[in-house]
Length: 271
Image (tube, rainbow, N blue to C red; front, side):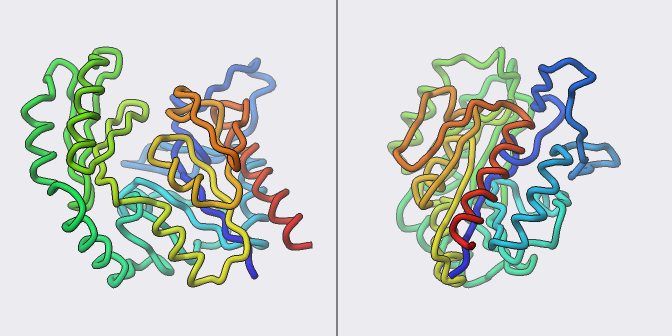
């Protein structure tokens, strides 16, 4: 019975230059590996040690990236090791099998969204009416499933986020603020549902997970054991759960620590 390891990517395993948190003296900074290029520019990194750990992990477990990124955004990421057989994209809206969308899974997701929450068009219109051009930089629709805003966070009124969260909750939607991106996501659109489907297909005997944001909380709760870094939305709010370890590391070194914990737990389960 294999071990299934599902992990968020951004600010959990991979990091933009702004999120690296290299607080140590320059001479002691870890060597970095670029794992994403966008428009001919390096965009995301992990440490070289983390890259080796991930390669070792992929040899011992079923490794599943679990991201809110769209499929196109995910496919820009070039992780070390073999291409994962499964990947969760668009916060669970798409389940990729050998890089290809599972159409049956996607149809099931769409049916559930139509039945359980307000339509995307209603949420998009509300965001358009209430967002202030003073702090709004871009508004996007992702995979026709959810919406997100790119904002100037220091100018974003705290009260607006709270009001949006309450408004969205009444309509079955979730709000998550991650860095400069504010997400509005249907409540039934979850990484955990896709994780359970992969676990069913693979016959996993143990599931491990990691993530840093509110949108990862359900993923962590669905796993047998989970980890969150010392930064991010979950850390900032003091979120905790009995099976989830809160790590002290922040930035790119947290990604390295998480992969080390994944590998340690996998080895213990598969001697």
